[in-house]
Image 1 (cartoon, protein in one colour):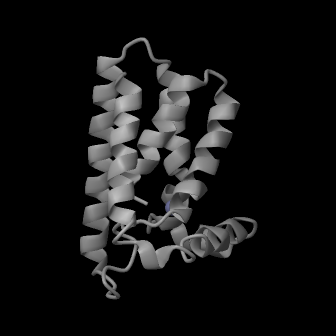
Image 2: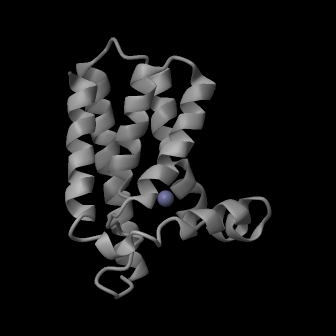
Image 3: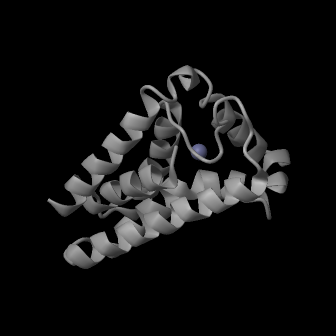
Length: 154
Ligand SMILES: [Zn+2]
């Protein structure tokens, strides 16, 4: 799932709950729920072809960059939000991808227990709905982004 979806859902969780441990827990759970849904992102195979690593990491970086711009704008437009809770939601909702997909440290986490078990689960949940990644996944990702932005700014 795109970082924009993960971070916006994490921000939406943080916007509603002041209890930081609860935000951390829900942020992590939201990551797996979103990854289970059909989606297309730089880490997914595009039409059966693996994209070049340079292109993949550029797109992933751009995805995270746009996410951060949106979160900063939301925090500027809604100064009454609990910034600590919102930022905690953003970071924890994205944390699973940051731990297992950033090339500097991902191989260590992927091989070392108990992280390897979480990594295998993270990979496994992507599979069941993958065949719907284009016809449902793309509109669903856009819908989640739109609903979250509306929810955060309402
Ligand atoms: Zn993920």
